[in-house]
Image (tube, rainbow, N blue to C red; front, side, top):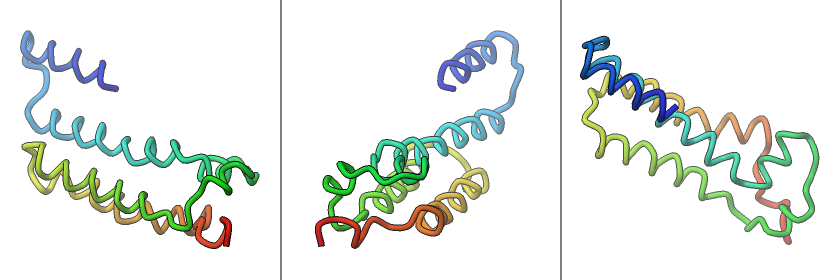
Length: 117
């Protein structure tokens, strides 16, 4: 995705294909991919997505999954601080971020209580 955005940015300088709003939307779409990628780095969530319990993931899992809301907060805060994007373009990213954790908790469950308690 980053390569596609780099090619489009290069062509933009040459041909003026897209306006600034298109670049804002592409940046927000690229940032919105970071949250699912971050979730897929956790062995507990990956094993739950595939429908089995990984014993090593359960043992390695701490008693809290507080890193996931923290990751979501870091992505949203970093996006607001680092990208010169209008707030109305960031609104879909904010809504997706707010719904990400409850959706994961509802579909996969939470790892609290599944560890060494």
